[in-house]
Image (cartoon, rainbow over all chains, first blue to last red; front, top):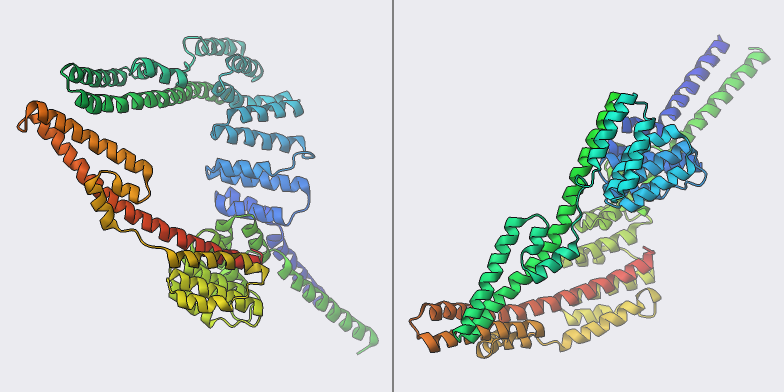
Length: 293
Length: 293
């Protein structure tokens, strides 16, 4: 009787303690559960707790990776990048290294730092020799190369992707022709130099806007400038020197410099839009290929 | 009862005792209201995450915990929510080791948000035994008096602050210089600025110390005046251009007078703001030096 009582008490206390400890002493499991529930802010706190109580450098790297994923899901890419930058990648296993560098490349792409993103891909290529893994990173790599206007490298990456993705020969040929037309010189997004746009408007008001494709805006700007200059000269001609100088030239000065500034900004906006449209076409093609498999 | 039974009973009691003690170590296992971890989040600058944990249901259980109020006070302080920070700091009990620090920072937060009377009351009601802290309190009280432009009370508290203590010595000197400046400062007259601008456009702004604005105001108003005069001379008073440019000149002339009056008011506000910021800065430094924050 006494022995039975002893074992019952022992089993109860041991069971209770082991369950309680399993629930609370493993912040990583808790964080993962919250993460899978889609509560990313709460999960980011729990992953930080996991980091706080962990001493193993590789496990810390894994927790930081998940914490960065939380921020990514909250669309806070700069913070995700800061989190990943804290990871010591020296001794991390290749699989985790690949995941972390890929997330860094994505974060840098999303924040517009394309060169840094390409550097992340280069680092992956140096360390990871597994072709199967390399195929997985190529879609984002292609978009980054496009954004950096590395057309030849982007086409080579496309070629490698099509040949190694496991498509049928006829499918490869079909997509190769689509890629060829996409990267045709006439289809590539043109580049409008901001400096050139400004200088064009400096010599002929409104021409910088026309160079950026805003023909109507450029024409209106040209007409306003010509009218003000005409008014100023007419006033000089009719010997209204002060009116010509203050009203005509004064207002011309404002519209002339404003037009130059506008042309400069317009060129930047145009470049961003053209590149965005081009990468949307690339993304659509990549999704189509990946959906087939 | 045999010896064997007796031994078994002792063994059971011993086991139960060991297991019960092991359940004490459970409280050391990281739980949700983990002050050490919350402090770590604050050190990392993750104030929102720290606040989330402090306000979580797990921490609500121990809401009389002084450390929680103290940590919440710091979170709110770093998030620039100074009113909430002051309230949280005030909840720290006199028996807590954080009491003096919390009270002084609560007072400082109230000074910063402009509630000087509350700040004065908090400092007055705080029980301090340490000479260093008493000296610091007198210095903070002198700062409040200076903000209220009460120079006599300022002198009274200022004398009680021990300027030989390194934590406050630099700030004491700065506040002394500032009090001398306040004594000799003479407000500029907005009326005089308006009159000056009435005689000569731009002169009021020059009086307010805005040289660039004065030159711009003179040339724009005088220019429009010259254009009006030219049109009046050639076309007469009934001419449309004379009336149009005359109206523009009149508008510019009146706006210039109004602008000069505003400039002086802005100048005085800038001076008041400068004085306030200098006092706040010099009240803050000794607090941070004393509590290593």
